[in-house]
Length: 320
Image 1 (cartoon, rainbow, N blue to C red):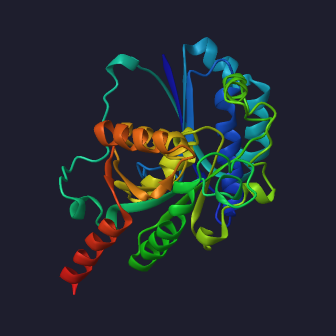
Image 2 (image 1 turned 90 degrees about the vertical axis):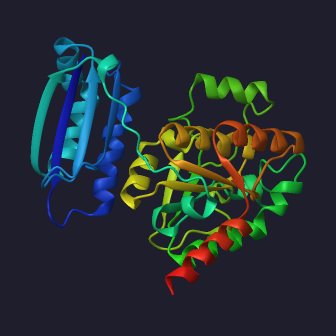
């Protein structure tokens, strides 16, 4: 296989909106160009000198690499979103054996105590899909047993405030449904569970907006998502690495759906994962219970907002 690596430096004065558009444009190719085995683009986390962003495309051979480079979508994205803001670009192509690629764990420290794992300097609070359609009165998906949905609101609000107070970054995810990202398996699943033709979390609508009681503040990152796991958007992992996060605290909806899917992917990527049981909710009490049990067995430490805040208070007391 061939790995096509492009390091770029953007021009001084380039706006964040232009950079985000460039990253989104290049990442849009990964499902649209058949020649690509895999593709990613984001901030240059390796810190290779002056370069600000890195792109990595994997293709089968030199012939498919040429077809990818010549593809109309690649040509358009490059011409409209990339080259206009590039100050410098370096390209390297090399053959590699995917089976011989080393997997490097992101976090090598072994923390067995909650107070170690959730230290503020390496922790981020993740708020999964706390949107009006999922948790506000009148929301399109507010059906079923709403006991845990209602119960998680106040502790989640307090948890967000506690994180901000101690300097833990808060990262939001925001589900959206649109024709561009809906695929066959997604549409088939909706039909299977009685959601065929359902309208919810449509960008720009009230239902898509994050609920007021945990609304993001200026400077806090929101990750758009079109699937259960937030890590299907490359911006999620890139954002957490930039923040230096090693432990992720999970709040949000639904425990057995988007929360568990994101927890699984986070654990697979080498993050410590802590699910705050009083800050997550599902529309079925059995699914809430089973999901927490499953995550506790395989993927996460199950704790509570009170226990984490108590751990933070211990850290703050020692620092005084």
